[in-house]
Image (tube, rainbow, N blue to C red; front, side):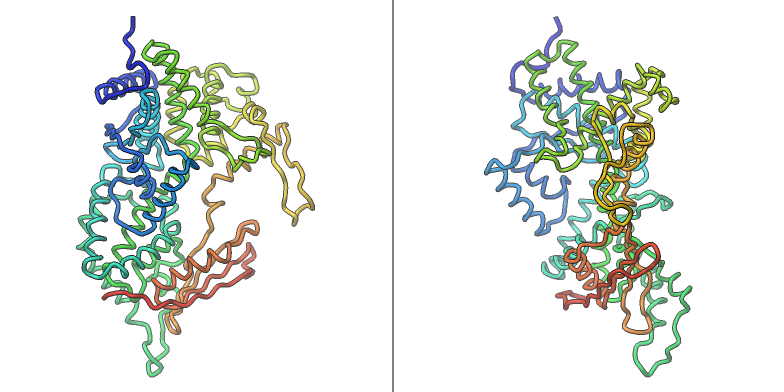
Length: 511
């Protein structure tokens, strides 16, 4: 008789080791997963709330917004208005998985399978994470960032540092490089170079600003447009990078804070593009591992039923007319697509062979899935692998609601070949960061006049910025730039739809 990993709900650290080893056996020998070394830490509910507040990172600098989030989540948790995640997993090497101490033994098994092997494999092998992140160096860099922020607070004052971080956090989503081409981020090298790059940057900075007229008595001779834009690196979509390099009045320590926030934003950028794939992969992996452990007799029927209840809740997808509906559950959509791909590979229909000739009937499910996990992001994954069968199963359809093209709301795609392709294309577009994130660029600076920073937002399908939010973010941008900032929203014909102009506030900044 096979010895069970545990009986009942209780567990200890020896049990966790047995659970980890059993999950690892299935993950490596049956699924062929390739993971970072695991570091599993058991934490309390309060520590999980703290991890929530600092976006899950174990080492982070202090900021008032983290405390605000902690207070909100804690109040909701104590009132029973929300539950806590069973786990938080960090994209680092070693891969850190936080487990709630309140979890039962079954839930600890589920979490280890889901996070320590599912997410871990995806972090290590997906091309976006390879391209944009440095799992080896992130923990050391966060430790450096924490020490640096603390030293700045001691030297320049808490208020000055807080204002700079407030502005940087407001611009965080516009502080990433969205396209490949630059060398991979090496966070350990960044830490070493933090105190070595000043002379070169100041030389380039002075080369730009010494050409700017400082008063009416001087000549109005200025840089040519080409020269000015070359020195400023325009157009530039990475606003934090532009400010770090070109803002005329920022102190060196402020530039380093912008650089820290920018690197952390870049580190999390792949996660925003792979939510469906990442959660779908981890959910599929935990489902396969838990089923295998049950079949081997490592988990009792009662414990397996406990797992199935939790798994069912995770992949629950409310209908579109359900009051709980708030969009697609990434766990549900991702897991459904992984299972559908397994079906196509192992037992395809004629329709599957027509739509997916490269994978239909190849039989090697694990190899096909590992290739998909490594080479796609949400948009391309959905755009290529959402099948007509799954569209019918999920009862997906597309509504047309553009009044400029057609009055009223109508069903624009039904369950025929053209409709399947339209549904797949439109759903994939909802996960395309180039489509859903506003395209805002710095386009010029009035060096000869009032030094106004000029930005442009290219509006897609009439989706303009929310005015209140736009003004708040632009205010932070103006504070960092220290001169006026203007933003024009333009359509595809370069027609100006709206313009914002913000003036800088006086900031309590130390030199």
